[in-house]
Amino acid sequence: MSKIGEANFLINKILQVFFNLKIFVMRDTFSILFYLKNEDTAEKSIYCRISICGVKAPFYTKLKIKPKYWDQETKRGKGRSKEIPRINLALSKLETEITEAYEKIRERRKKVDPFYLRDYLQGNVQDKENVSILTYFDQFNSELDERVKAEDLTDETRIRYVNTRERLSKFIKEKYQRDDLYLDEIDVRFAQRFRLFICTNYPCKNNTAQKYVQKLKTVITDAWGNSFLVSDKLIRHKLKYDHTNRTCLTWAELKRIMQKKFYSERLEKVRDMFVFACFTGMAYGDIRSLTEENFNLMNDNNEWIDKDRNKTKVKAEILFSDIPKLIIEKYKDQRINNRLIPIISNQKCNDYLKEIAALCKVNKNLTCHVARHTFATTVTLTEGVPLESISKMLGHTNTVTTQIYAKIVNEKLRKDASKWNKKMVGIEDEFNLKNQ
Image (cartoon, rainbow, N blue to C red; front, side):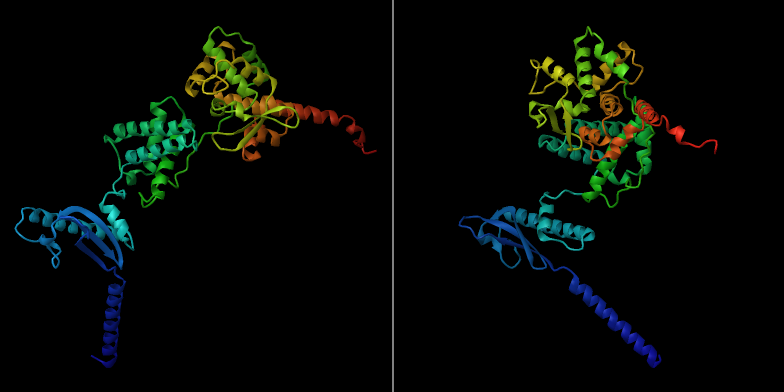
């Protein structure tokens, strides 16, 4: 071997020794010690102390022994007592469990905390591997229950997640012939098939089905954020919604509903709630939670509805006009839990509104939210209320959302065009058309 070759060989050996030494130095110092707690009793508690890099986490092993049967060198029981084999077996088993848990955690974490290891052994740390989608969905929904109790979330939103979980379970059983799937099995293809399942098996179209997929995406992202997943496979899955025109009533249609005499009390109450929404722009959930505390007398001597929207927590400020006043006065003796208007479930309201539409010859798909659209268009925008004011009354965070309504109001366009055309009368006389 040449001198250059020998030099390179020695350099490689030195680097290898240095590298191995560095790994040895960087490796955690890990040890397990069993000892007796110093207490004034005949039998003393056996404690375990996990030490990692000098940090110590002690805990009770739930075993006891008389001091005369304890061997300080082996840290095990000694003597001929019948309990000694049982105690020693339990300590050896625990030592093995601690070592295996330590190695398992080290594979996922660069640094292991002894207190985390102790809590992991005692079942106080949730095992985040091999968790199923429905199990995690149940955990997610339980947290939503707590948020509803804390008034941080509406119950309507919670119910949507409960329904999504229910339909997800049916989808998995039908399409995969399994009771559940692991979180890491949920991918884009799964989401696409779930959307198709919703469209096929339930009376809804693409946009509604996509909302169920959106709930699934939220849960998967939550699982990823809480380290139950290495990656979020749905994060790049784009939901494709069909473009739809927002339904709103014309003045003629709204007046037919207002003037109709109903012989059914249930239809009358739903009609009144709908008309209230048409003149306040309030969504179903906001009307449901409306109380007297939401009314303020302003400097203009008018009463205003001053309420944070349940959905966005953005404040909506609405003038309390005559028709809403009459409706609240009508039901003042029928209030339940301080609610100003008797109101049933959103689903039932929408069902009854279909009947009302048929009776009033309104050939439109009437829902509770159509009232909000009607307020934004027919009742305010077409009557000259500025978009900025409408946005404030609707509780929108900005006018971009409100601008959608401006695109669908033909009546407003005709009025503005007619007003502009009148201003243009006589301007033709200023034009030298014949170039003379």
